[in-house]
Image (cartoon, rainbow, N blue to C red; front, top):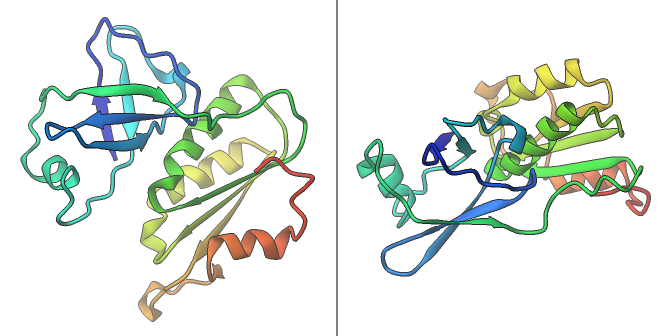
Length: 187
């Protein structure tokens, strides 16, 4: 998990669920969802939280996890994307994520809690191993604090030493097992 510090006087207006793009020197781009809700940006010290998984050999992540220095200047563009909570609906929500795709969902949960949104919501978060659910404790705490939020962790490749007793298989299949007709949900 990485926190990207914006210049102290910069304010980025965005919706929970949107992303930014890093502009690399060779002209390529790398996109990462913001994992914190806009209300968490504090004037004078705005920080955007990103969940970046190290991909060995990755053009950007090798730099982030190897050579990047504190206070290194990065070029970014954002906010980008149209993934955010539509508050004009009362349909129950199904949040579906795998791995670090949890980042924008985390921002949406923070936003819902901050705004007092009480629509029923279920987070389905999948990973290969239980450790891929890297903020499981954070989710469990928010489930306790938000009676409208439920959580279904799903693991596809648990090993015996993981002692995994939860749902297994692929996360999208777990959603469809629980909700064969998603027409009544906002997903």
